[in-house]
Image (tube, rainbow, N blue to C red; front, side, top):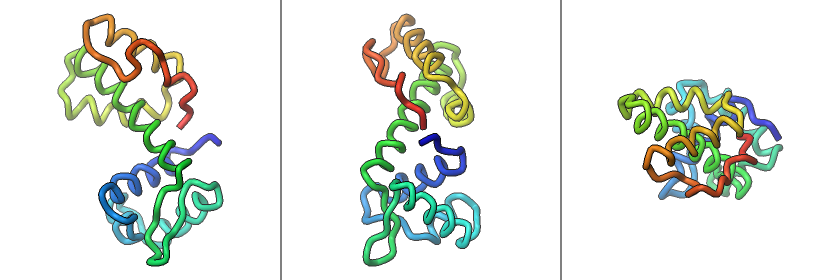
Length: 139
């Protein structure tokens, strides 16, 4: 399933908010993304239907295993791009992270692997260590 940028933002928000806790509250997701609670409810409903999120007995939003995989794949993509921008091109860490977030939405798997390999050729460690695991990433 190809996820929209908006869906990815919701998945990332739930991932970030629920790390070390028992899920994310709808109000916290709304605050994080600067959207209304009804917007969050609608997005969460669609992501639940897609099997990426679920709610617990306290109505907290959790990622399913599939949703967590999508979040981690996205974070890997952002990390590869940010590492290339900062280590190879010398872009400041904060700007590199911000740019990587935007680029991750449109970069092809081939380009992503090339960025990773180029980073490694410049003497820096990479996520894959030379055995690309990102070619199948579509999130």
